[in-house]
Image (cartoon, rainbow, N blue to C red; front, side):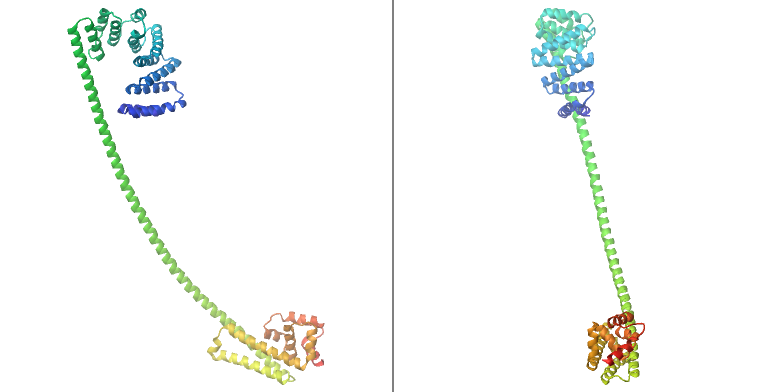
Length: 460
């Protein structure tokens, strides 16, 4: 991926970015399993170094690629890498490295029937720097075994012969190829003709050299201008696209913000409406509950008042029967019973007449009646204790509770068991009666408790 990214930068003319991509690809090369791909990366990386005039890394990259192609058996690519490495070492002036590469290249040319032209040109260019004329004559035999394939090879061969001092053969090879558009061709031809004292021809060749160089420079400038225009156009298109995209983004963000605000306002409005409805519903529910509670309390109060009235009716009936049936009661007890009847009759009369005094709360009314009942029971006990002290002592000696003593006193007044339960407000009359029998040792099957207590009181 980094390799192709670098190629794209290369085609755009951005050498720095291209080299950065190739270097990043080289760092990731440990994960590469294709040696040919790695070799291509090294070659193009070397090419970028060459354009930056960094000839040492340029040479090293091509040597590494050559080793890879040597291991894979790709002779054509191997010869191309060695040709470029030989050029780089020759530019550097590294004689030791250049000699080593030159030896390998000569060996390949001698062993191959049709070696690559680029390798032959590189070897011819480096030969005069590191080998003698005798070595060159031997090497020339391998070159002459096939016809010269291009004017470039003939030009380089002529220039090499010129450098070894063979001017006549140099001119012959120079004229063998059609290199009218080659800057190198006219530069070499001008140099050779000048050394052969053909100054007119040297001048013409030099003028052609200048023209070719100027045309080359102009072409480079035109290509650069064309590339700059295209690059400017692409950059403007990219900027316009970015501006348009940003405009769309801003518009979209604005619309989204407006929608979000509308949603928030809608949610808040619905929330307020829901809270208002909830408040109204809660108020109505509280009103209904208060009404139900009021009705319930009224019904409860009426039921309690009805129950209280029934109890008072029963108590009045019991007390009236007691006065009629027991003529032997003391005057004090009759007086107490009469006062109690007067209180009960007054309350019941208030209820019948609709007097508002009866509308006092049930707890207050019940407490008042209960307090009066307690006062009445206290007077009854006091009267019996004055009249029959031994009887009261007898009850205490048998561990009767205060409530049970009140029960016994009512028995002595002549009330029946059910009437006493109603009067005292207890439903378990049988249990109290059984407890009194047990404490006094009375056989419940044979003796009537009320009659027994009256006889016991009078006997003591």
